[in-house]
Image (cartoon, rainbow, N blue to C red):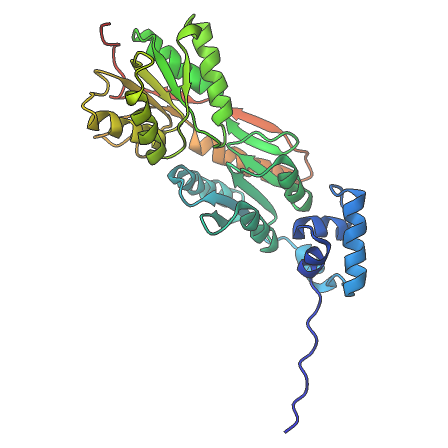
Amino acid sequence: MNQSAPPPRRTTLADVARESGVSVALASIVMRGAEGASEASRLKVKAAAQALGYRPDSRARALRSLRSGLLGVSLRLDEPFHAELVDEIYAAAEEHGYEVVLGAVGKHRSEARALEGLADSGCEAILAIAASGTRAELAAVDARLPLVSLLREVPGIDSVCTDDASGVDQAVAHLVGLGHRRIFHLDGGGAVASAERRSAYLAAMERHSLGDLARVLPAGADEREGAAAAGRLLADPRHPAPSALVVFNDRCALGVVDALERAGLAVPADISVVGFDDSQFARLAHIGLSSVRQDVAALARAAIERAVARLAGQGPGLQRHAPALVVRNSTGIAPAS
């Protein structure tokens, strides 16, 4: 029996992007005639579209012009603090009549893929939590639909973040007030906000006339990296041990505390430790970690409000929110020399 041949597959924007060697987001910018693409990219994409016989789907374009009521949120699966933010984002989005679509970033899914998936899902705007992409990459997404960078300041992109410098300054001032002088900083490596917190620590030590005693040690953003950094610190005979540590974030600080206690040191009797985020782990009674609190609810509300404002035609802006140090059991008076 004769079978009719299946209809030819319609050429898609993804085909054009693949043929021209650019991202789907950049191909979309070119085909829509929006700003954000170089002349060379425009020529390549247009040539690929013509060669493949690509024609924009007018029906899809019409559907995209309708309001979906969806806001996309990209987050990292391995960051519990991001989950706390998302919970508040849901509440803030509901107040404005929006539903939230999540785009997870993990070991097997890149941030670029997560953002592209949200854009392709009909979201009206995207909130990117601690986005690690370059400014150019994020700007390409923003040219396609409004993007709000949450927890990271990105020039030219709507940004809502914590005043990291103020938070670190509070941590150092608290320790100095307890008599500490040998205050070291364990930084976050390549994590978002690591450079800002490192610079803030060095500036705070200078303000307290302790610049000569300042020392930045490489660490990271999770428990394993914190424990490894503490191990290296304890094994280093070249410098006197610190009496206090200002750590990049709570997860790293928990690894530090665990390593110190396994080595027979008491926190805070021997070494005081301050984290950053005031995450749910820091608040557990048996941990009691002193930590710089980021105002999760305020950050979430501000990010949603910026997304709504962008959709109403406003330009991008920057908001920094004041943090507050929460003192618990992991900091105490400096031990006698």
